[in-house]
Length: 73
Image: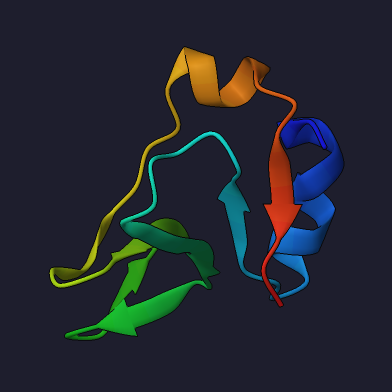
């Protein structure tokens, strides 16, 4: 799937991944809007990497143009 096709699934709470990634990346997920210290925190992407845990994820141009996105769950 393309990023445009997979984005509605990501917004619906599904976890996604690119088949072309080497394997340590487990999934990308969207974290909804929340608050911290009473201030709004905008939605953001997290990626779960095996052995490292979560980190912020910003898709690259290659990620946005790729057509190998799949739903993990």
